[in-house]
Image 1 (cartoon, rainbow, N blue to C red):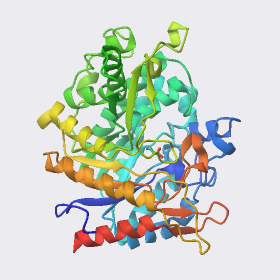
Image 2 (spheres, rainbow, N blue to C red):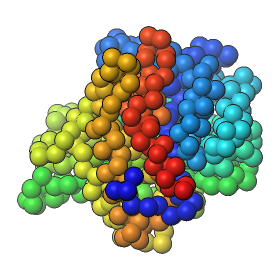
Image 3 (cartoon, protein in one colour):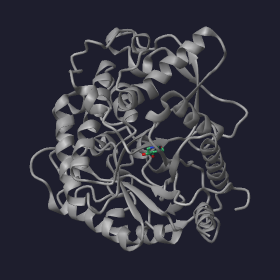
Image 4 (tube, helix red, strand yellow):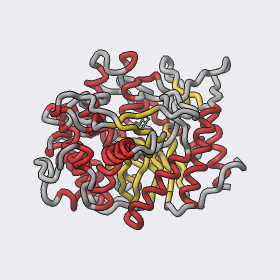
Length: 459
Ligand code: IFM
C-alpha cells in the first residue's frame, strides 16, 4: 500500500451497486415491471438478449453479499431501491413486501457495521409511468416525490446518506434521445423535457428527504471531462456544446440556480420559454445539498461534426454537432474507455474552480473498470489491470483533495459483476466475480487489494 497516498481520518471507503443490475427476482413479491424489464425483453436491445430477470439474485442472496462487504471492510455500501418494487404501478398502493426487502437489507448492513447509502432512482422507472409519458411529462416528477416520501418515512431513520438520482444524463439522453437505454426513444426534444423533469423530481425528493430528517442528501452526476480533439475554434466550440449537454444541464440549475448560459448555441434554440419550464422550478431544483456525488470513468475527446440527423425535430441532444474521438496512446478497458486517471483530478478541480463555495463536499460515488477477466484454473481472478485502475484513480482523487477539493468518500463500481445495461452480462465491473450459471461469488485480486487498502487506512 505504500505507493498510495494517505487519506484523512473519516474518509469513507465504499462499494456500489444498483437494483436492476443485481437483484433479479423481477416478478417476485409484488414487484411491478420497469422500463428496463420491457426494454431488455425487446429483441436486439441488449447484447446476448440478456435481462435482469435473475441478475446476481441479490434479492435472495443479500446476506451473502453483505458478508462480502463486511469482509471487504467498507464503511459504506451504496445501493439503489427499485421504485417498481415499492410502488408497482408508479402511483397508488405501496407494496409492503418491497419495502420490507430494503428494510431487511438495511438492518443486515447496520448489523455488519456498514453505513447504508441509498439511491432512490437508478433508471428503473415503473413501466406504468412510462406508459403515461415517462420523464417527458411533469407528472412523473410528482409521482417520484410521493415515492421518495414513502421511502424516506420508512427508512430515513436508518439510512444516513441519500442520493436522489443516479446519472440523470443517462436517463434523459440515452433513454429519450439516443435510444441506447430504456425506454429506447429517439426523440430529440423529449430528452430536454426529460432532463428538466428529472431535475424537478430531484428537487421534490430533496424536500421529502429533508422532511423525514435524514442526515445527508445529494445527487449523483456522471460529469464528463471533455477535451478538444484539436485547438481549432470548431473543436473548442464542440467542447462547449458537449460540456453543456453532459455537465452544465445539471450543475448549473442544481448548484447555481440558473439554466446554462450556453444552451441556445448547444441546442440550436433558446429554451427560455419552453413549455416544460415553469416559474419556481429553479428554486426547487437548487435546494441546498449536503454532498455532490460524482461518477468518473474516463475523459471524452470531442471534435466538431455535422448533424447526423436530417430531421430537425430529432436533431438535438446527443446529435448536437460533436463526435467522440478515440484517444490514442493510453490503455482502454473492456468498455473501450481510455484510462486517464488525471481526468478525475481535473474534473474535480474544475468543478471547484467553477462553483467555489457553492460546491458541496464531494463523494466519488462510482469509479471502476470493466476488464476481460479470465479465471485461473483454481477459479481465482488475477485482475491486475483493475487493481492498477483503482490505485491510479485513488491517487488522482487524492491529488484533487490536495488541490483544495473537499472529497469525503469513494465508492468502487462495482461490488459484483452485474447486468451492464445494453451490454448485458458481457462486461464485468465487479471486484467480486459472479458465475452466472451457478451464481457463485469469487472475490478477485482487486477485492483483496481494496480490503488491504482500507485496512491500512484504518491502521
Ligand atoms: O454500470 C453503470 C452504472 O449503472 C452507472 N454508472 C456507470 C456504470 C458503468 O457503465
